[in-house]
Amino acid sequence: MNAAARRIQNVYLLLLLLHTLAASFIWGINTLFLLDAGLSNTEAFAANAFFTAGMVIFEVPTGVVADTRGRRTSYLLGTLTLTLSTLLYLFMWHVSAPFWAWALTSALLGLGFTFFSGAVEAWLVDALTFSGYFQEGEELESVLAKGKVVEGIAMLCGSVAGGVIAQATHLGVPYLLRALVLALSFGLAFTLMRDLGFTPSRGKRPMDEIKSVLRGSIEHGFANPPVRWIMLAAPFTSGVTLYAFYAMQPYLLQLYGNERAYAIAGLAAAVTAGAQIAGGLLVPYIGRMFHRRTSVLLAGTLLSTLVLAMIWLLPHFWIAIALLVLWALMFATLTPVRQAYLHGLIASKERATVVSFDSLMGSSGAVGIQPLLGRAADAWSYPVSFGLSAALQALAIPFVWLARRERAASDTIIGSSAEVSTGEVQKRKS
Image 1 (cartoon, rainbow, N blue to C red):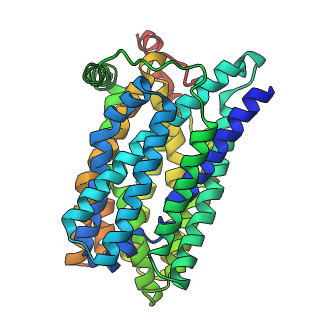
Image 2 (spheres, rainbow, N blue to C red):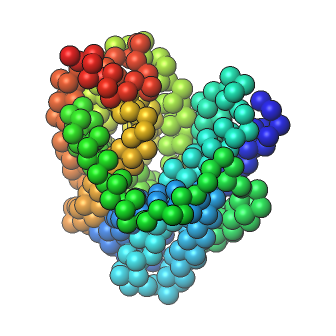
């Protein structure tokens, strides 16, 4: 790796470290924070739903910003938006703000995260290409793999620290730390990031670009049956995943018997992070057990559904911890398999468009499912809400089965890759 490429890699890893660390300070305590501010379970998860709604609404427009105004500009806007909205969260907690204020600020948080979506990786690829990295025979995967390790370490440290600090002080301190680290990230990005190898398309009209993205998503996504079925499963799996992760925080404290043991909630998020790292390492071995990716998706979705049902039926602290680990392992294992399946069905020039639309589908499901399950927790209990989570996730299984029946080229684990184009898929099927 030449010196220029190494510098780009180091900037990428540093910004990824700071962004993930800042985000993870609150992952273990966010639901507890909202409940402590006076919201009910229904309102807390409705606030989370407004966050995902913000991501749905702004995903495409902010992607156009990255293309027309630059990746660096998009990153800086995202960091600034997240810093301000985090401080607003802290202020509303102090004044016990009404629900509508939490809803608007949560949507603003969603806007902040969409500025990052795709922009950082696009900046990395453009800059590495400009530096001659790929001409030396180097692979992008090696840099991205290092990024995953950095993310895992940052999430482990941030989640544990956030819970311990909240318990030693109060729930607002991790949010203040998050804002400070984001401000540091803004300063470093402003100084170190440059749009190398990329020229913003300032002449393009944003609305025309948005319409083009939406047309491409439908044409190359829903019009392709194997892609369509997997996309239709996403609202159920994504919605349940977000609810289960955040609902586990207050539920574990309830089982533990001390609702102010915030370190336990942080530990739960750290356990999830560790399980995700382990799950990612298990992926190559999964390929030796299954010949088809849809087999992995079917088995994993079914097992994850059973785990959620067991959390409902076995309300004991250590059993819940063990089931949380298993559930996180399933999530970490299924995600790269699902990505490989989808990428193998999409031609290179439409890949970013369709993948963004797939993300929108998942976020759309979370908008409706989170407040519904939060209401169930209020009306009945957390265990019952996990039982309903299992039932909702089970609705994804028929769509995965329909995708399996398509026998797409990328379904075969051995001999398939992300470079298979849509045209090749159709050729093999015929």
